[in-house]
Length: 142
Image (tube, rainbow, N blue to C red; front, side, top):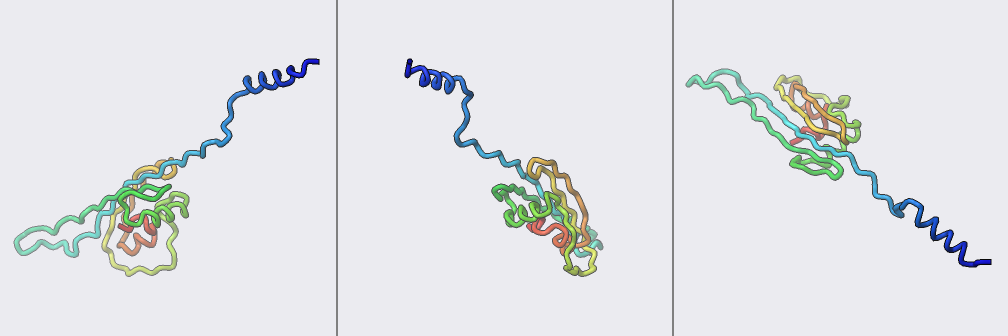
């Protein structure tokens, strides 16, 4: 009986088998990258100045937000990413019990990009910054 035959057969089977990683690479994390813009609130007056000059338009502020890991130009990136994760990527969430003053001082916001690989396109005008933060958490807190 040939004692080398089983070893030769085993070696042949191992060489013919497809290669398998002993440590598979982790699943890639889908990208979250958003461009966030806040415009407003508007100037405190819409009346012309005595020299006939109209008040300046509200300034727009824009930052980038990345998640997994949190980063970008957003000053509260980790909190903003947590808020997006808690709402499954929705920028706006159900309001909590916070009461806001009924003062109309509009704030426009826009979010464009991707959350975990899914496209995001969000645009809304809120009555004031309190309403904005109650409905969007830290996402537009910059």
